[in-house]
Length: 180
Image (cartoon, rainbow, N blue to C red; front, top):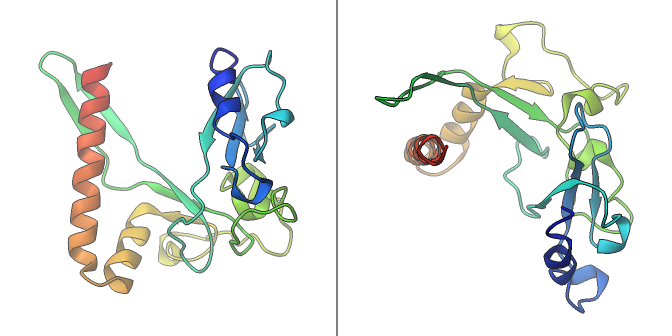
């Protein structure tokens, strides 16, 4: 935005508030969670300001009742020929409040809906620091492999699901590199 503000505004249509899509809105040059907010109306945004808006996933995969995101690390060794490496380990960042579908009452609860470390580490009494690799599967900052292990152990055909997910991630990385 702002070049796509009209399209953003139209995405809400004439729906009542409960049926409108929810977006996570981030300021263009923000970092560490500053300025991020959830909205289900275009009226919360100044059409002249620069934002990145992404549709909020209302039914996310949860671990321990918490939302999380994963960060994976890719190294591009060469362009011609294209040689890309995906580091085997990554990072999973967890929210600190139990997830509930966003509504008027909880939409401003950043500890529930956002996974930024800089935000959640301030949730005193709830944020759990990990002390080392021996507890990498607990707390609010975990290893990516602990997430994969959780999926393998807690979902039917977990091994196959992890293999399928990793294949899709690898394909996404390749397609992104080809696009660039």
